Amino acid sequence: MSDWENTVRCISPYVPGEQPKEKDIIKLNTNENPYPPSPKVREAIEAFKYGDLRLYPDPDASELVKGIADLHKSKPSQVFVGVGSDDVLSVAFLTFFYSDRPVLFPDITYSFYDVWAKVYNIKYETVPLNGEMHINADDYLRVNGGIVLANPNAPTGVLESVDDIEKIVSGNPGSVVIVDEAYIDFGGESCLPLVKKYDNLLVVRTFSKSHSMAGIRIGYAIGSEKLIKYMNDVRFSINSYTMNRLTIACGAAELSDPDNFRSNCDKVVRTREYAKNALKRLGFEFPDSKTNFIFAKHETVSADLIFGELKKRKIYVRHWDKPGIENYLRITIGTSTDMRKLYDALSAILGVKEVQL
Ligand code: PMP
Image (cartoon, rainbow, N blue to C red; front, side, top):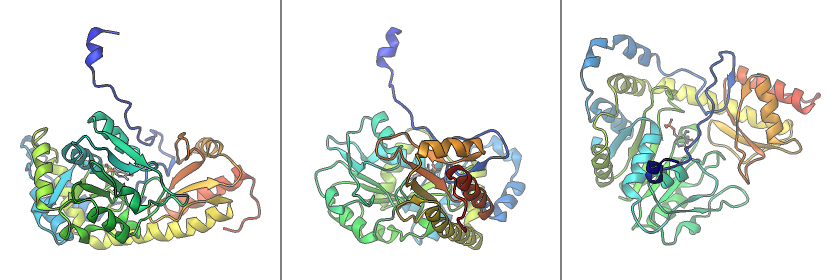
């Protein structure tokens, strides 16, 4: 080992779901939306003047920020935008979690949270979920240096009530509470109305799932003007131009077409509800999902085996070899055709013949 390696910031990084190079894959492993974004996004790309790429973008991404503020009936000064919600969450961790007290989050949740905590040297403690994979709000009413909750949670798909979240936010006036609503548009009740009441609540959203734009990388946060100002101070101390010109134009175009957005979400929700029945009949059990994925465990066959067999048939789902969840598969909701192929493959793997799906 070289001497300089003693002073390297070493970290085991977050591992995102596989992005296979082959074309004919049924990709149900990274919670992407199976439907395209609004045609207005295509128009924005076609209208984009490539010569403008020589110019820096608007550092405030004002056009996109205004669209988001209008959507949520808040002020532009209450909106922070970033390169996907991973970027937004990372800036939020760096900005708000800066104390000797531990940041709290559930033991089963988005596996990037502990990676950011480690890379930024943030002390943290995980709080066990209960047997139904729900949080117990009272567990979060203790000394802490901040709280982060994905609602609905990932990878479980479980939604917590706004009342429970409010209990946590109001019971922790000395900490910032981050609520990561990456999947809220698939049937959950948002905590956004609470932002008016509590200046310590930051709600984080993404264009990657319900807006079908994982490839363009847009995430945002809504919070009190004070929270957003602190985040922007940190962001502008690292990089002034995070949002590029094409992204800003595409994001604003997507927001101008709420009908396409709603119709895509409705389709995903309908397919999810059908999938719940189909998976049950195939012998899977799972906590109820309010997201665009289902976190399912088979009653007799190991997740590892099913994962491998599906992959051989070019169907990708997500599996973590992590204690407590090693027997679960996270299955993203695809088109009904994709899902049909999944049920056929699962029937073959599990040797189920007579199930009417
Ligand atoms: N939060 C949760 C709970 C997620 O599952 C994801 C997707 N990996 C993200 C945030 C980040 O999504 P993105 O950076 O694409 O906005």
